[in-house]
Length: 70
Image (cartoon, rainbow, N blue to C red):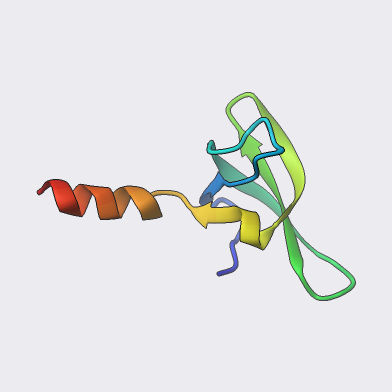
């Protein structure tokens, strides 16, 4: 799944201080190999060069949990 600017995402990178946090995509960059990397802005900073496989659309996991509670 690719993301666009202004999308809300959750970062999954155990080496990042923002691991598990929700942020907003502020920039999409294409590498010379045709892959996309992202800059994501968080409440207290930003992270650049994030690969697509480290991001998840915000709310995806929450939606499944909400369905179980109803």
